Length: 315
Image (cartoon, rainbow, N blue to C red):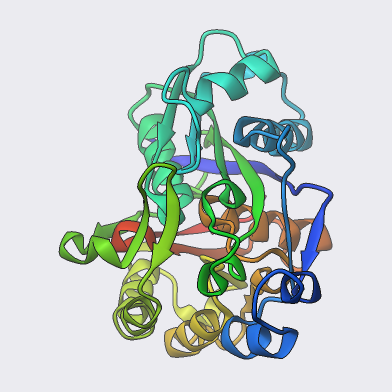
């Protein structure tokens, strides 16, 4: 098959902004402490009346509009999320209902922080197989719902938001706009990042995650570029999971993407889990930091100690 390409992207964040100064009034922390450890200045927090499927639908609607498509043009909806409250109907079905998409295949993908890149690969494979022609791929998480706001080690990290991409089959003769995926996991270390319990709460072993990400992921990111047939120095941008600036910057440097714009949306948005990569990518496109056809490395990692990456061409 001819493969797929990203036709358009979109993103959405709730209106409420929670700054480091705000958090300093809630727990024993400070702006200096947070900036020095994770590089985050602020984050957006959804209200009690803003469920995760609403965040996802706002981002998806923007991506559809940017692509110039109608809801009826979509035949597959994939939503990457780990913070949906209900088991059924799933978030993808609720997004489809909000947007008026008739009769799509609708599935959720729960790979936590690597969810969007897993979902994008799944949509690409589905298009390549001829089982779908256009897919709506969304990463959306409401981390504020699973956060202990009295725990300063985790509450300073998280934010809420959504990002989306419209994926479509490439015309005959056109090079694929979504490169081969490199994905995997370290199941025996799954305890390092968790959302579990009743009520569910986010927890992580920060030092273990930091060591794993900064030592094990750079060669995997390079392999992702090799699979796409592109050198790191030819990348226009690098969009890593927006977990922590102290992870993003060393990983990008070790990759060798010396000419690339490195997404640092974590500074303004915090860790939005599955939303972080499409959210950051959409902002780069919106600001004009990358141009149509530019090669961009997307690389998700984190929850389950899973990872997935691919090189895509910007819409």
